[in-house]
Length: 395
Image 1 (tube, rainbow, N blue to C red):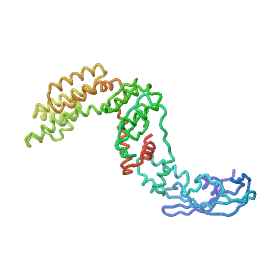
Image 2: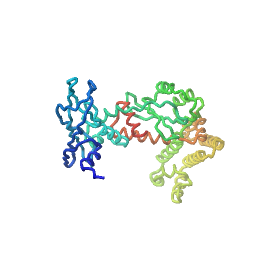
Image 3: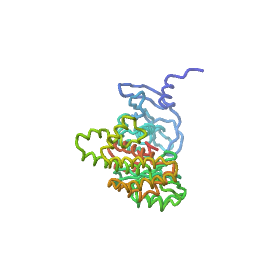
Image 4: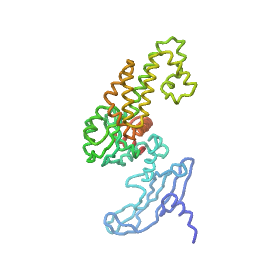
């Protein structure tokens, strides 16, 4: 078998196997490849007659994907054919470049694939030698259609996007498959009703995981009759930690400056589980709790709530929650009154979390990633572009 000519290897390397490489110019940051295609008989696009008659040549400079880290330009010496049947001229077909374009299709997709990382469009454009507007135009060619069927476990949250004239956007995820289900232009109840009306399998949803939002609860009760509404653990635990923090701040402000030294790094110690503290931290905790009876009571309530969270099943959780509520009422601490109000309104759905093995943790992580995407772009005004970018990076 005869060895392949060097020109053929180069053509295959750049994805132009029928190209004739005429010259390659290299500089510090740019590579220009001069080439033409093999001459062959082509079909006239006007009358469908075959022809091999050349009218003239013209050189077209086309941006292509980087080679060895350099911006690459294809200097394409393209033929114009002449058709004797209809007496018209036309260019030879070239698959890498759409009509009237000066950038290869593969460069466009190469740039789009960069957007899967959480980097700015400006950085992607600079790296690939194109303009940011070019990338935004190509993003419009990508379509993430609305899903047809709802998952059995649906998690919902919102984030501040300031896109499309709305302050907040909604996010739906599937915590079982760890996938972004959809990004919604608004979190308003009217828009959510319009959105969920279009799904025919609403009765298939078994769990609806959410934060403590009255509108979401009403929506779930209306559209998902077979679903258990679950309040994510993070959203109700923080009520107790806020209450303990507020007691600590109030006690600490009223103390003499000489005693405040015992409260150094007190936040971390007070909010940690007692059995996870080392001996030094336990001693520091004992000193802090002896300074105030109210702080000791608040800390005891926090530990009791943590015991409730550690319940093995719903029956045990019900008993421990009742004990915590009675203890919080008996303490008469004003900082724990919002906790009691919250439990009075949402305890039914909080207890459902002990029957559901899924949380909003994945959704909260997606929210953090969305904030990074938004920050690198200095915000998005167009919701479609924002949604496309999120789906590209996170789906």
